[in-house]
Length: 152
Image 1 (cartoon, rainbow, N blue to C red):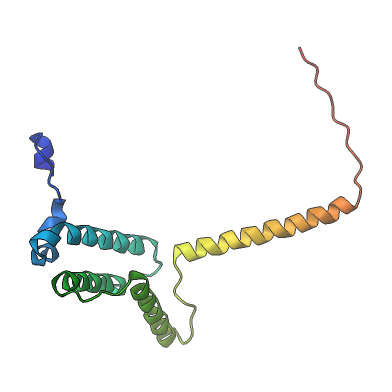
Image 2 (spheres, helix red, strand yellow; image 1 turned 180 degrees about the vertical axis):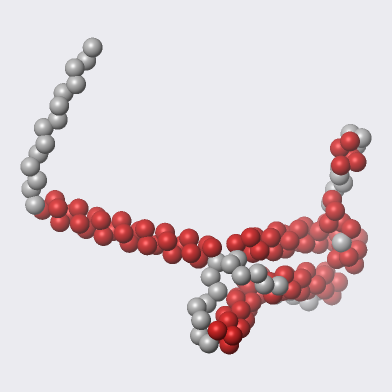
């Protein structure tokens, strides 16, 4: 890539991912497809690593299995599993591992889960505040007189 930019030539179509063993095992017409698929799985793995509280290799192993399944799909036509199903399996496995290790400890939470929980709490607080405001509206309050500002 940098050589192409330095010499003002064409940039490589697939970049460094093209040198992966997954891409090398794919057929000629499927190299572009599998390179995009591999890039997507790498992106997902990076997001999981960035947003998970406790590091684990289980997500990466399952994503690697998905890439293997996709290669088999292109070769034999065997249908690969859906990403959602695979991620649910990993989450269930992590939860069961944590229960076994911690004796019923809390389930694995991510930063996103914490953010969702805090947003829900904020909404609940806002709802309580609105109810309090409605109760205050029922009681008449003395009106305050506003001072007028002189225009110069």
